[in-house]
Image 1 (cartoon, rainbow, N blue to C red):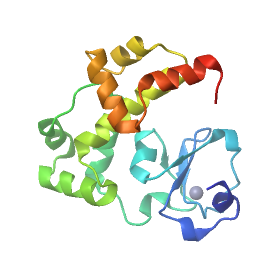
Image 2 (cartoon, protein in one colour; image 1 turned 120 degrees about the vertical axis):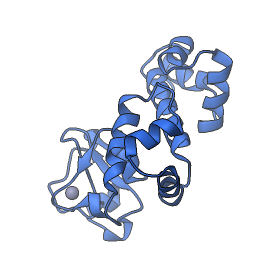
Image 3 (cartoon, rainbow, N blue to C red; image 1 turned 120 degrees about the horizontal axis):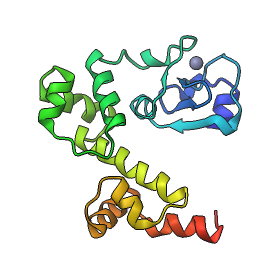
Image 4 (cartoon, rainbow, N blue to C red; image 1 turned 135 degrees about the horizontal axis):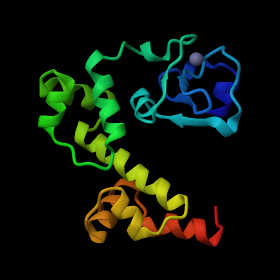
Length: 178
Ligand SMILES: [Zn+2]
């Protein structure tokens, strides 16, 4: 991905997005803008994940329009998901936020992200928990802060999402293993 980005390889457009956290923008791999420092770069598999991480499209490479134009309603949904990643979300709330039919929302997530909108939100929530663990927070407070009421519920959801128990991330940090 680094190589594709550094060589402006347009073959990879749409396969991943380059998030630049120093400028708050996400780009296509082929973007001709000045290359960001690697320490500020996070790669995202989809635009939706880049947007949910708080980034906006690039005017130069028009990343927001590739491979297609994002529906207007999606922005309010992603913005809400980002701001409320530890809260419970349901489909009624999605209808209210998007102002469109729930089947439109479901269909969009299924075809662009291969998951349901509620699963996408859960993944944001668990990614947040993983960040907390990686920053050195202990297991129980990471579970609590990411909105889980029981340790076993957290453990199970985390394992299902990442294929590794939460303790693994915590241990990595604390044993200095990378
Ligand atoms: Zn760009």
